Image 1: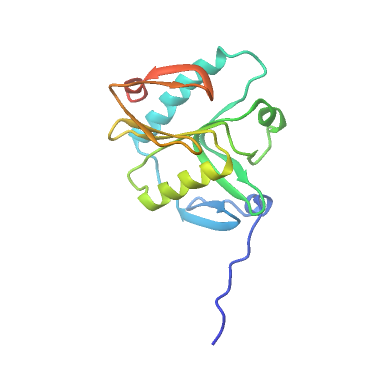
Image 2: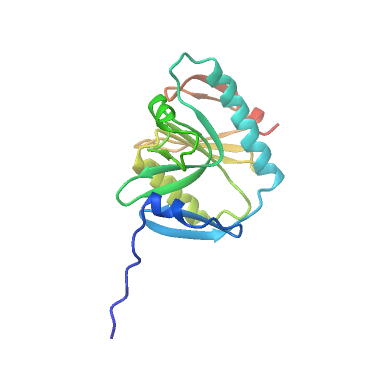
Amino acid sequence: MSEPTTPALMTSDQLFAMRPSKRVDRWLFRGELRESKVTKRNPSHSKTVLTLGKLLGNWLDGRPKPRGKLYGGEAYFRIRKDPDTNVGIDVALSTPEQAAATGKKSSYVDGPPVFAAEVLSPHDKHKEVIETIDEYMDCGVQLLWIVDPYDETVAFYRPGAKTVLYNSDHEITGDPELPGFRCRVAEIFE
């Protein structure tokens, strides 16, 4: 009887050296290559990502320099090293140090963002969303929003804290991770 083989772990550099595929999305989870069929984003997802980026971008423009950089559209972050975890994040805010260290030709931002927002899509599986939340919290993301454009809710996750759920009747703030940021949840979905 043969022993089951453990898949070889990859690094971020090995992942980004692979030939791109139009049919498969690839990422690393604790060094393990994961792939899924590339899915088209629906209008609700795309609009929510864009609106959230606009709200956060307006806030960030008013912050003193040096400041982090806002990324959107599945921007890759290496949130864990050895073994590597690379994730594409819908909307993320880097630290000023990460922004300075990320060149125009960089394949990913190194390190966890201060803030990450994942906008749910119809094809998202509950198990994978929970796995994502756990990994983000374990890797040092200070504030994670899971944004549901269908129920018009935003769930706040912080390491070591209870989840807080907001609906379209609420106003949210980003303090202390996003100092001074505030908006009505309904604005995200207008």
